[in-house]
Length: 341
Ligand SMILES: [Zn+2]
Image 1 (cartoon, rainbow, N blue to C red):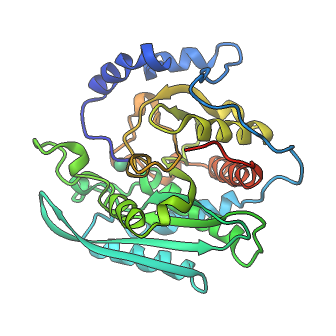
Image 2: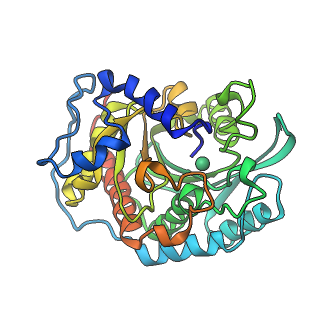
């Protein structure tokens, strides 16, 4: 997760400013809110009514234990900031788990405030019978300014990258009666020098911005029906936020998927505006949703600290998010037509 390193107090003030617009409750208020009667996601009049298919068929399968094992595998390499040897090892690890799949590499050099870095996005492609693509993405680098600490980003970068590996296991070798699914492990997401005058968005999201521009130039972006981002999805105390910067109807499909699986109490109790990897795709008109739990420990205390370790995560949370993502895809496959862009 890439939000600039401002104090949690200022994050709260900033987000409270958005409260009037989005119904956001700051972390301080959140525990109280959780003991309140059943919530409903904020009404979203901007979203078109959904043309939902009937809720039929068995729920999607996903092995949360195996996904958690992948998180352990990834963090075992240690901190993996761009340009590091550990980063290279994680690139190789991801590729090794995707052996036999169609994997495309998007490699370039990023010019950052700390110099030039090699950036490597990996894209695994699982073809479907329908014309169109659904992209799922996760960044896998760890925070560069924390490179000399023990920060391993078990939740931030680790959880979602591991989850995509497990989703790959579920897609592999099966005929898809739906859109093609492309899994993206994007790189250099974290800000390199967040405490300078450089505008935050010019010093982060390097890998995903490159991919969005590339796919806009070659016409791929037009074929993408939805972009689903996962970030910080392994917290044992799982509360996925509704993101005010995502496409409302895609978020509504995610909530429908969660409801169909009985996991809705983990979704959308509050709304926050997220600066995350989905923004470059939102900007080029691709409907997107950011699935993020930005309350990692009380008042988000574990975020961007060496305390972001595997013991804070659970296999169940990974299973919940992974199966909701797969159910979202299954609903999107059958929504005919999808809302206009
Ligand atoms: Zn982060």
